[in-house]
Length: 162
Figure 1 (tube, rainbow, N blue to C red):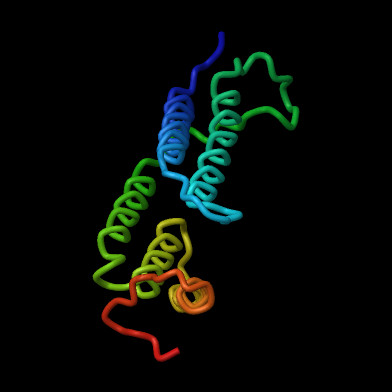
Figure 2 (figure 1 turned 45 degrees about the vertical axis):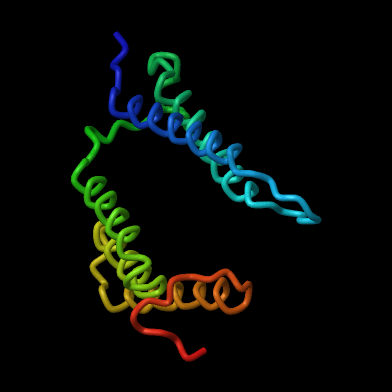
């Protein structure tokens, strides 16, 4: 008899729903006139399309009968047991906090803290290393977008001199 893994199916359906919402929202973005090679729809369409591909692959794997896969093959799904919901919920809370604090605290400050929290939740125990890497990545992306590309990011309460 085939064992059904409902957690994987729920996650796959959730990703499909999110992909559809992202794509529908992307197509609602008005396309401006002019000679823009890449308009405001490009990135949301890319993200929605990528998410849709991942969601479809996940759905196929989640809904495929386990009996149809040969035992011991590379395609055999390994069942690690139930999903650990605690880290998932902590990461969702961290993402919500990041979104809420992004503008008042600032991009590079809140991004640094968010990266460190994510690394900690995912099992890293090297706080100093994680903080340095997070700070370097956050500052590099801030400088690239805000200073080089001219895409304004929230500076927050500590403004950079560069």
